[in-house]
Image (cartoon, rainbow, N blue to C red; front, side):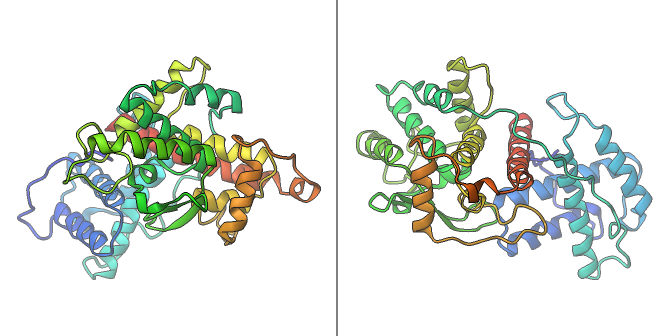
Length: 356
């Protein structure tokens, strides 16, 4: 089952399905894929292999295109651990893992033909985020942590960073002190999704909370063995992603705003409100770390100082001007594509939470 890698004994048969899956896993690790990505792809393959064994399919040569089409239908009707049907994004992810596995096996001359070469993936859904916050609702959530406690002050700083920058949950967990340039108002996001580095602006208020946490709280928990991460738990270790999500979800619930969500809620909110305040779609795209908005749209690099200006002018924590005429001409379809991509990210994160 994806995201939960079940332990398996080292395969004794070098031609077993498990051995081929393990070879692919080692290939991904050697190519320096992100650990979480390797685990997900491998767990997806093990899920497929388990499905094959249940149907008496134990050898790679038994897997044909009709078999893969049967598996695709199985995913369409499958129910996740949360009791809901698998999302289209989840189906695509699992099928993509299988498809790239066969491509690897073909390239390594481990199979004679690729039964997945013409496997068509489900069409991605264009879905908008379920919820975004208004500026007033965001402020209510931000005010929920008890800042008289160490954990509450740390959580307030985390919420401020998420809201100000729109970075991902794991990206905020991975932040180090060296990544913060307070004078320029910029964060370095290193080894983000796809192992890509980028710079993002951060607002003055978020920096104030960050500095307060770093001065008053972190030194109380940091140990000689602690990592360089900005945010630490009570034992001096880096934060557990699932605990961060549960904490943010708790604050959203406490705010009694009749909306649900976790870390990605602030990512959606930042992007949506900055767009409404007139930020160009390209600037939002760079802040989010999206390499492209569609398969045909080329990624546009922009100078970080210009991005900082746009952030200051349009971020909801600093009310900005409305859109000018040129910005109004940004196509709604392009904005919809960006928000749809955000919704797919959130769906993926929700599945991780439900299956963890």
